[in-house]
Image 1 (cartoon, rainbow, N blue to C red):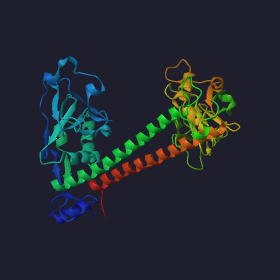
Image 2: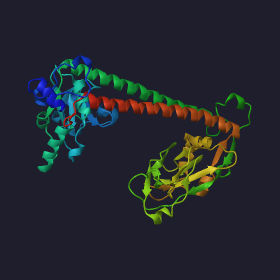
Image 3: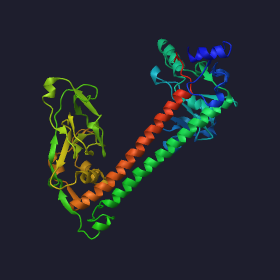
Image 4: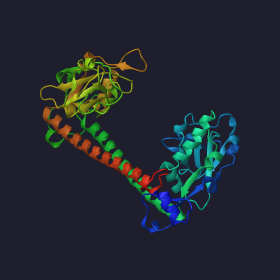
Length: 441
């Protein structure tokens, strides 16, 4: 029997629904009631005036509602403020000019500013005072309203349009708990969000610490010693400038082959995409499977451990990007746009990867890029191998590599924790809000 049917029986046939997880104090109360939004909210119709034109808000996927002159330096063109809607804290906004039904769904609450005005392309509505706007913010984010919105958008598509008016939006139905349960759900998810924000700040602080530490551990332009040296190396000689060709055993590229549109599985052959290497990070999942036997026979240069992969041809922003590979992946191969720098002698490849990934090393590699295309640049092997790098003795290389690797491991662990907190929040939303269409047998 579905949650809806169970709740209908408990409430004498009145339409209601129960989420998968409910706080103890609400488990024996009635289910959430199905009700139209227009019984809970109304359109915002307040018009702006000329004095409001410096207070324009814009709907941003990254920031939610943001003040335009803070982020973009814009004002209303032509002084037509009177066409704009005046909104206040806890009002909701969405853009009804969607081009595809599947793209509709960005509904944002004004939470950061007390007031502002929005362009007529946006539709705005306001909940009644008894409703908890934070709860409804989470309700929309959870996707619980997606089915109703998809229906509206699909109807519009059949009619040759995709716009969803505010009256149409408010005609859709939602599942509403009483005010006390609204508050409990909102408080729970706000707490989860606060934990995520705190963990995010921790990760960013560690990344900033690493960047600052690298600036201290590597010599700056025109210097022969770093500003900080470990105690056992304080009396050591200055770092020596050496061309890269004396530090690595060469730069070896793969070949371009025809490939599929998905990553290779464990027993399949794959070729890396150029996006597998960004500044300091190697993502082996960024690869394409190779099916054709004739193409499999052509692949060369497998991904080997204790090497550095360098992007020799890429966009201006990513050309020269490099990343350390700790463990070899024998079923994955390099394309012709990536080089593998291999160990030579006593060079610490981990240290060299940090050196090339530091601001100075990254800038030096990027400065070698040329080419007539504005979208793609390339670096010659000769120029890269001739690149002069200031390096210390092998023991000091290893000491620096161990320090920064330890910090990288800490950052990775805290980043995984951040991912788990985000996944936990998503799971909470799926269980704390009724999922329309699901059936519990």
